[in-house]
Structure formats: C-alpha cells, structure tokens
Figure (tube, rainbow, N blue to C red):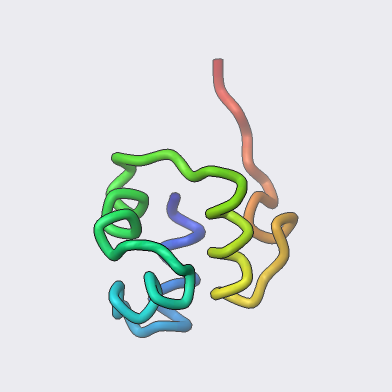
Length: 67
C-alpha cells in the first residue's frame, strides 16, 4: 500500500526492522506488505496505524475498491 510506504519512510527513515517492531510483527511481513505481496488484517492495520500515529480513517482515506 503506497500510503503506508510513504508514511513509514517519513517516520522510520525506511528502517523496516524498527517499523516491524513498532507494529509488533515480523520484518518479512512488512516487506511483503510494502511489495504488495500480502494483504493486511484489520488487527495489523490497527497496529500499523498506532506505529505511524495515524487513525484508520487517515490510512484508508481516498481508498477506492475495484471489482
């Protein structure tokens, strides 16, 4: 997800390891999410938002679901 990547780079200076720790998940999970290889559970989305200090609404603002 591009928004996560943009905010993650800004807040964590691209350090996936520190970001993963802040999200309480594995660095491999973060790498897969950023590469578009893994979907995000609601639980992980909440933890990512907490780490990025944003709300779920801010994370998904402007999101358009395609068929």
